[in-house]
Image (cartoon, rainbow, N blue to C red; front, side, top):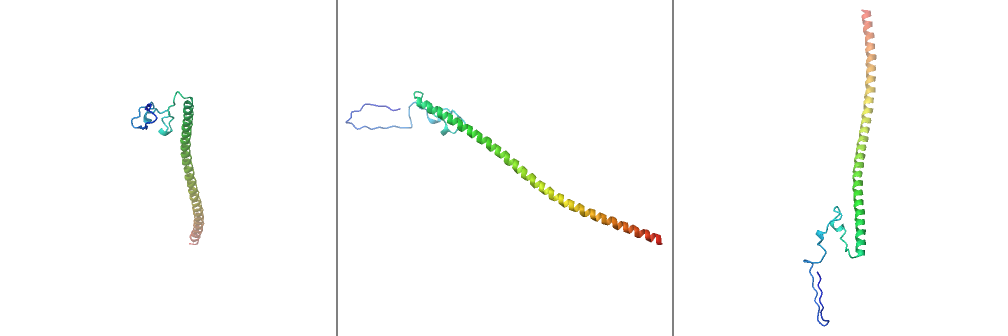
Length: 142
């Protein structure tokens, strides 16, 4: 609280004040009610001086800005969540792409192995047929 007193002009004036035990009408910063609890303390709109139209206007503007700030932060949080979801989908798609490439390589290898086995089977069938013919010739000549 500031006190004033009339002092004669020819006497020196000494002014002293202390911020420790201020007894003015403004409450300490930590007891100001939070208009927007999710905002940091330094971003909170300070209560206006109700006697001043300009103070009321500034307070309303500050509240509007704080509300816009809150909305932007909310939108950023939603967009960050969406970003995480999209990154997870992209990771999954890349994993599936790698899995598909691996499956394609395995398919090619198995197809080649199948072709080789069919060729070996047909050669074995031919060889077996030749052996039967030879066996029948031996049976017929004995």
